[in-house]
Length: 205
Image 1 (cartoon, helix red, strand yellow):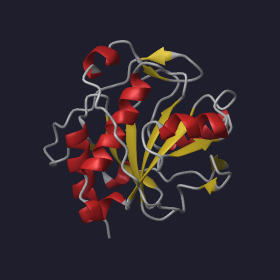
Image 2: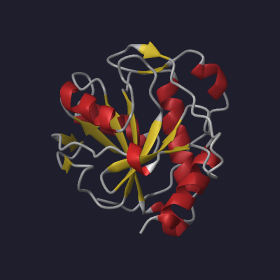
Image 3: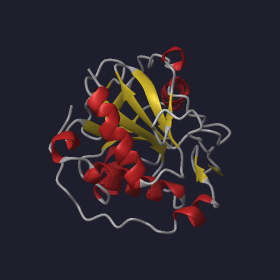
């Protein structure tokens, strides 16, 4: 479900490098550093573009958004950018959400409505629908907060090649046609992410 995206003023946080040193967001308050994704394959993307054979199908798991609507990345049309975190994370999570908001704002207007940002909580006991909605509205009201059981969230993260247990996961993942195909690390800037999104949206069928 793609929605109109009102622009909100989001200040880009210049302390990205310093905050990354403090760690990323994992399960229920645990912090761990995220891995870097180098662009050594010279494919033109700043993130890591997965080869066709490495794109795992998204499992059919019971997730819902803050409006109580089901979220099924295995079948939903369009392109989604997925970030796993939790609202009580005070280090990397706000930085990544700001990066995502700024990256979408940098897209050409015609492409903004083609991207949906999903924030999947790893702390569903605390992150109720209301808590998630208030938190995401600070970054972009069009961002969808997503909840589910810890087992279902872990299954989704595994399929998207995000490691929640040891902090070696990526920060944000682009998903289309039920498979992850592009991954970004904490070091990706909003401009670089926007460039990647603009390119991959042009290449989408």
